[in-house]
Structures are given as C-alpha cells and as structure tokens.
Image (cartoon, rainbow, N blue to C red; front, side, top):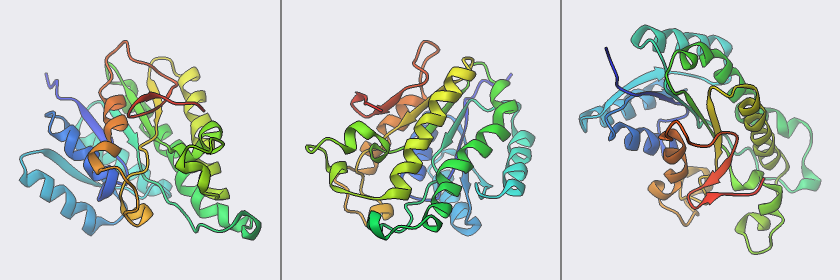
Length: 239
C-alpha cells in the first residue's frame, strides 16, 4: 500500500508555486507540478526531479475546463487519491487607478483568481475525498483583507487596485464557504506576504522560502489542524 503523501500545485513553474513544490518534495511527497506553459512546466519539474524530488509535470491551464478535466485524468491515472490541492495560480492584472478601472478589467483577473480555484477544486473533489486527510490551500493575499488594507501601518494599505484586491477577497469568502460545507476537508487561505517574485517585479521584501511558509504550514496540517481560516507565516490574520 502506497502511503506517500500526494499533492498538486497549480501555477507552479516559477515563484511561490515552484518553491512550494520544492519544499513539499523535500518531505518525500509525490508532487504534481501544474503549469499552463508546458515547456516551462516540464523544465521546472525536470530540474526539481534532478534534485532527487518526486515531481511530475501536469499540463494545467486553470482557466480551461478541458485542461482541468485532462489534468484530473492524468493525476487519477497515477494515484488513487490526492491528499493536498494547492490553488496557487493567479494573476495580478493591470494595476490601474480605481477611477480609471472599468468592468472589463476585472474579467481576466477573476477568471484566474476566482473562477479557476472553484473549477479546479470541484474537479478534484473525488480524488480529494478518496484521501484519508484531504487538505486544500487557497493562495490568497493580504491585499484581500479588508482589515489589513485599511491599516495604515501595513504596506497593503498603500496600494489601490480594484480587480486584484476584490478577487482575493472573493477567494477568501469561497474558502470560508467551502470549509463550512465540506467539514471532511481542511480548507484554508494563505497570505504569502510581500514576497520578491516576478509578480511584483521582485519588489517584495520576503524571500521565496518566507513567502511559502504559510502555504507549506497549511499543506502539512495534522488531522486536528484548522479549517476555514486565513493565515500568514506568523499565524491567523483578519479577514
């Protein structure tokens, strides 16, 4: 009987996703590295496999129903259960002033940051339910917290953006609703913090390891761990 923990990380060919794959892979887990760009995804998986990690590339465009279905089939052909799903794929969109933002500016951001986690989670529910202790991590942001973005002592309060911030607020509510509806699955939201990645032109002050601390913590929860919460690397944060 195979007791290796299995996990899928979306949007994982670089940045926080790739670092999450690396860290979980170092625990001896079997990791499926999901990425929309097949060439970059294969390269990332191969480089991590060269480090002795059990990492396999899975082509996954989280905005495509057909791609999601194919990814479920690919993972299901390799394992009988998925212990951990990490919905990491996300886009920032164009940072326009609120007064210059139009409804059309929300569509691409919400497609990836809101609709995709719902589609991916729904599609992988059968494999998650087959696991002994299934966990789902939604990679959110402090930018989605009404409390944090209203706190003048926080860097998040200095950035105004309608589509991205509201998409992460929506993802937070989705996390909370899922957790209430599916008590058999531990479902939490992670705020990586302001981490140096391509996402922000490497302006963040945290390292990739620091940025993935909350994600890894939630992915490795024990059976008595929380569900329906919102956490950064220091602990619980306000919605």
